[in-house]
Image (cartoon, rainbow, N blue to C red; front, side, top):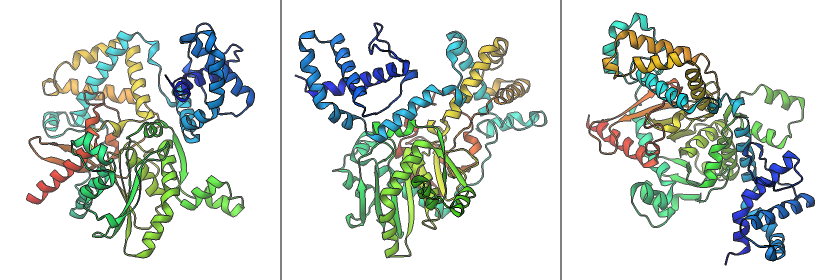
Length: 526
């Protein structure tokens, strides 16, 4: 027999959403005959008003009756639900989770405001044909020279360029390879980022079993148990799992933040809109407490350089800051020779980058190592332009080019092709074969079309943070060498439609650790 808590748990989300939908629509009947659910009108209002609670409870009972029960058990069930309502509500929906759901619902309602085009208005066949055409066009541009280059003056070298380069279209120039010291640090801290996933991560991602999360950390990093300062392996909405350890050999205090591993982490990921924040921790605190009422404080805050980042990651950074700042400050005060290093992978990498920007003045000399860094913020603001952050991104990592702006640009391009049948068919005609089989005329034409499509792609896009090192080549036992070189963030300007665009195996933490170790071995041999 199902317990009252189980029954309430199963029905709470659907009924609560239905109840709120009816409240918005002004519907006096909480369950119309159609029993249709309208996600575009859902909002999450956790009011304690007695009348609303009563209406909600009646709605919950009504829905349960429609699907399973006879009227004979109605009163008994209602009494049970009334008894356990507050307990279920507090267990299922925390304040942070309610806030996350509200933000996600708002994003969905306001998709068009972010530049996302509703492709449902076009015939499905046209949409599919347009996606294939855009994918082929992107592939040609990706495997040729950058389309930002003047094609007319470089056509004679096009074949040579195709053989030597594998660059994303638009400016994506390579800067440099990491120096020995930086490379050593990249390899060293990758193990810490991987260890944050605990024994379950080790078993699921690499097939290795360790006795507990703490033992996993010790085994993977080689630190002593006495050097483990603090840890919390559980995550909450807008508060990821983390640990703090002492790296005695390198004289660093390491704060490591875990990436997406639970449903609560996913809620943080999905709060994907932008939010401004201050690079000063003092200003951040004043803004949150709304205590900077003086004219002096106002002007100090107004002229302070502002930063902008992913809202969910920013909320996660603020939570970690509140929990760990005092502990880290005390540890650093013990020995002034120690420095702070913040490490993270995936969601943890994004949060680490934002936290590193907030703490830049609080902990001078801090460094951030972000592995599989997702799209964190716009290019002209911190943390994206913060050079104390070192990001390592696999060239095929799907999350390095995934933000609301990237999605909006794709829908804009697809909608243009849906509306222009002749252009769509010409792309299919000109891009039939491989790049090496195409004429210089066709390659030039592809570049011209791509530049034409991008004129309307003006959505705000997020990018990986800091100095970005792109990793590619032979990884996981493949023949050949791993490549690693610093690139411009413009390399991540466009979401490329390809067979690997949602291949999350390119994003897992042990891939980064293994690839960097292989690169380090090959580098030392050479």
